[in-house]
Length: 515
Image (cartoon, rainbow, N blue to C red; front, side, top):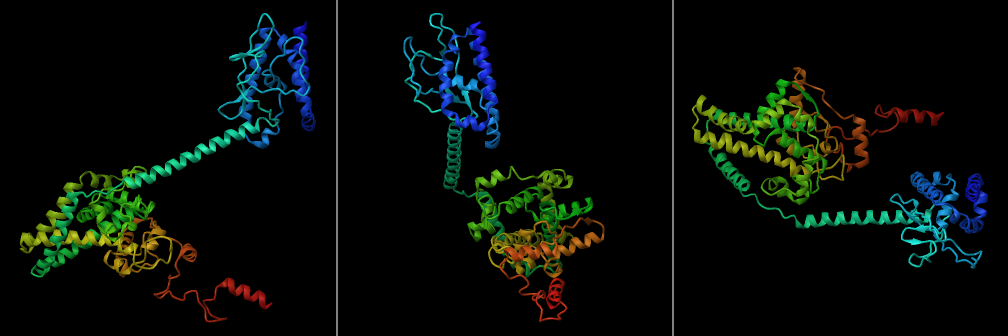
């Protein structure tokens, strides 16, 4: 009966406490401490099976409480405090020997600890002592006085103190991890020392020295040879600009199967690696421009951006970013992947054999002259024109669309590179198939070629940028040089009231003011 009575007392008190108003709970904080002391006289008398049941309910309840506490401070304020947890925390108080009394103001030391989620949980396990009926904790009995653990004041707000302590500890760990990551990156930058790739340096040296000899021989070559080398330069340039750049790198328009085959062969004449690899490095260049992940980072100097990056080992970040750029669209392009798979034989056929043998076979040019002019000089010229986009077009010119990046507007580069010199615009709006704001074919031959193919039905889906978008971006980020040196200067200026270029919004506002 005593056991049943004890359980009845605990149940009644639990029900009464759960229905207690929150304000009354706050007011009776000291009363709860005294209640803990009174319960100690009841719980030790429970048989082991009931004591274990109480302990199990405590563990289950604390697990639920740990999950609820993660929801947030607002929801935690709505959760009522269970008296069983209070009883369990009070179990760690030393049991008084027979004949001793406990002062009313004595406190109960909590044996609760924090679980992984930062919520309060109990590590209490109970067992029955046949002699005195004491409950035992893990590693010590209730009757043994606890001197190892410091006294911890109970928190009345569902363990906020402990949870805040854990949150602070986790925050400090995250900060330390972030600092360590930054430190590792700095050490990686310090450790990185570019090494010369001697085979590539030797190849570049041979090409450039041989190109000078090819220029000399050009004065003694036949006129058809001169026309032939100009034609191959133009075709290979289209392969770079309309193929590898605007089509495969930026997806700025859609090309038919026949046009893609033509562009793949034209790009093979240029000899600037396969289109897949070229597009991969170019996407990295746009995504991480002017950083260590940029393959030809202009911040490392003119020479490096122009040609040095080809015969120096790449930065580790460049290698790392090559693994994260999405290339699934090119991997699904059969023409692009064919050109990648058979690049070496295609390069040998399209860039060496055909350009050299055609003048020799059709108009009797010597193979010696044809090699140095139609391969060496032409190949080196095409390389350096493409290099100008990486070097000159990132250093010398205006920045009308975004003054915060290094790319500039370089009309001379546009003339040589068939429209690729409007680089500040291109880096701001890389999906525009024109790579420039204005469709001037004289300084953007590639745009004219794509438009011509569109009329033939070979190209479609040409992507552009709206004038309003360009205007907003230039007004927000530009250096103020937009429309400075062309026929569009003063486009938005008026001479006074009555000018036909006065915006409609201004006219409507003026009409309201006059009324």
